[in-house]
Structures are given as C-alpha cells and as structure tokens.
Length: 133
Image (cartoon, rainbow, N blue to C red; front, side, top):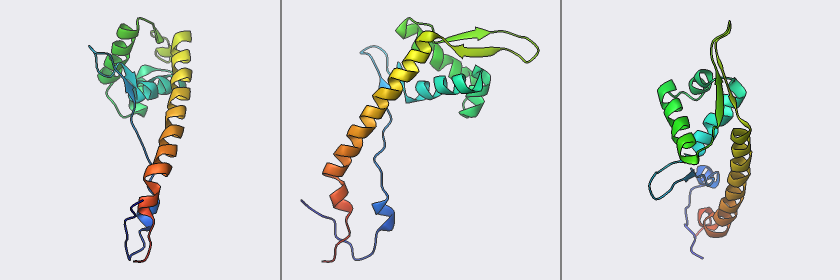
C-alpha cells in the first residue's frame, strides 16, 4: 500500500474523520428525505414548533416548511401535526409516522456511518501515517 511520506508531523491529518451527507431520491425528485429533513424533524420534536426548530437550525421558516411539505407530499404520510394559537402560540409535534421515520433513519444512518468508518480505516487511514523516508 502506498503511504504519503512527510518529514513534518501532520497532527491535523491524523485527526481526519470520514463524514458524509445522505439523502434519498427518486428518479423524479431529488432529496425527498435525508440528513437535513431528519435534523428538521428531530428539532421539531425537541423544540415543539416548526418556528423554533427552524430558528434552532438557522434556516428560514419558509425553507423549513417547504422541506417538510416536499417530504410529506412525496411519502404520502403526515410527518407532523400542527396546532394553532393559544397563549403560548402554536405547536408542531411529530406524528407516529414521523417518529417512526426519525427512528428508522437514525438507525440507517448509524449503520452507514459504521460502514463508512470501516472503509476509511481499510482504504485511507494508512495513507496519513507519517513515516521517515
């Protein structure tokens, strides 16, 4: 296996980690569901409203609502339930299907991250070892 040699200590290179961004697409629609919409649903669940979730994620309410609508329209399931008004304003909660999707995607992503780390260790980690010539 080839190794990149370097006389200097590459401490920063040794700290590299493999990262990825996942999304699910169809032949007709790109990005039906993925990391962004998953994070949005998790934020809705923890923050209690779409408005607070979008602020937490530093995204506009309009984009958050559009992303949510895109996923719900394509998947043909309600992911959230909105309740209007009240003294403290409205709230948004995940439906049973929304919670199931978050749980399943979390496990799916975990499996992919494990496979990614294994492939990184197998194919790239050796390249970053600093050895003297």
